[in-house]
Length: 251
Image (cartoon, rainbow, N blue to C red; front, side, top):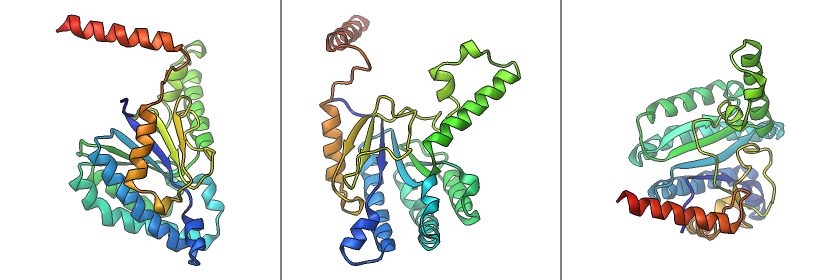
């Protein structure tokens, strides 16, 4: 069964989870952080190469100021609290997004966590904070345009690889699987370029109730998919047979 290299998760439903239990929305975010810890550790133990968590979108800044402030404080608390867990599981932490507009205390916590885990060689954990797929593509386009203007790149040489190499995710493989919880079926401005050939798994479960078993079931469904990337099934089978033949010959 095929295994994904990179799984991305849109963690949705914290507020609705709390409200359904007559708690305030922030209680849902606290429980959501616990769910994230469970999934991060489980994914690392499953030998996943990359795990992306959509923690806070650029659009989320429009939420009530009190909720945003509490979310930022929770993020800082969790980063410092879970650094030991990241080290124990050999996880390297990365943050993508417009980090320069994050509160100073968040920027410091993010930088310290990235530095503390920089020598870890296990799973890459990517937090998307203040992230926008549109902004990611726009900024990449600007960088490419600057290179063209400087004569470092010719317009006719611009291709998929050139654009991808200027995205915030240039150091990671594109996500093979994107999971979204809470029953919503949209990408919400997340990994717009990178998701071109991702498989999607939309789950009704609200994020605080999402378990390691739910994660494994999503991976199992992914493993049953035939990923053709524009080719036919016959071409895929032929490629697999050719690769197997080469392996036999090389041995």
